[in-house]
Image (cartoon, rainbow, N blue to C red; front, side, top):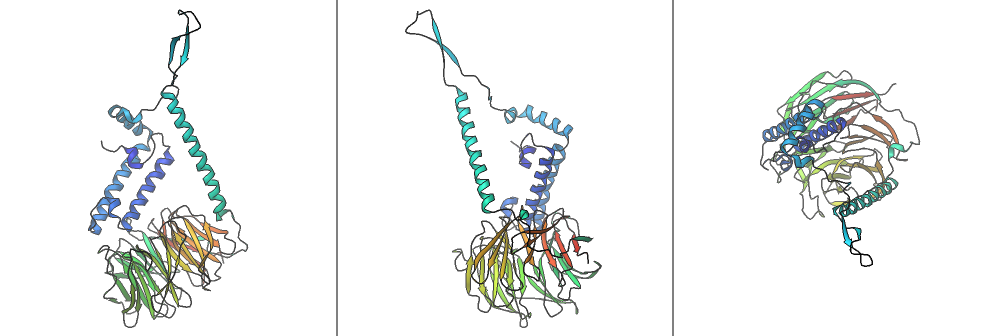
Length: 480
């Protein structure tokens, strides 16, 4: 039988309009994530599918979701659809009778005249219904108790007041558009230049990188030829932008001379030829940069000679190396270590010079997607698909605090210079500020209508830029 529109959206027959809308939006968001993560199983395509195959599969699925939403969100079209569905498949709407009365039979009594009878109630199907109701009630009770225990263990940081007041960018001063509107044109990476004058951005669909004036939003330059951008990072001292792509390539773009160099012998892409470079991080003087890939490998590069110093490959034992895709990498402020985050639910610390694994940080219960070191080197923050932000003490490698407040994946993190305020962007469409000392909530920025994938802060901390699934860059400024 062809799936009903209710099954397409995975909702109940009595779903309210808001539930229908939320279900459709969630489904479309999951499809976007599947395309970004090359989840061919979710999209029902072959594992050697091309980007065009992913795009086409996504479009077809979204088309069905939109059709279901249009019909079910309108009362007239929904009533008409329900009538036809009920006539064709009445069993779908069938409900058990909860008020069924027990069967009563008459039996002869031993101490009465045979003509006299007594009535005896025999067990009926309703007994099983009552038992199931009791079991369901107990399950709900356990769920409620578990929820309250969870609340006690992980109190929402949104309810915790910070110890101090901070001047942070909170006023929306602009929305940069000009990006191609498409299900795949998410603003997935943002980077502010070291001098705070320019912003580089990249999307998963457009085959170019845009550099804009941070004050006006004017497009100053565009890099053509880098396909399916995943990450852009500025060199700390030179006019060079490192660009990582979905096609497992790394480019170094001298944007003053407008020259593009591509590195040889990058990540192997042993999972798929479309493995993708998911993050890049320079050390403080720009002599080295680290790159991480969907194939689970980590590489450290000598920038001047453009050769790899060391490589750590994924290992299924999940002990000596990551056992799954690596999503994020960050240098410690003293350049002695790097941290990496992976879909194997771990954060790992490595010796930046040798590639030796120093520590495995355990705690996240789902994919770890983002990382940030505090400028003083004391803290490492990690954000994950479990919706939590973990704060790690780098002197002991112990967990210092868990921050709960987002309702979806924590996609990007950045510290302010005081090392006590952390900014997070999430798939729940929110940008939030947190105080590390108290674990309290400082500020929430609302405005995005899609996932927030990227968060970038200017060096003077007066401008914050955020980008995501709504295909725009939002510019936030302080009121000074």
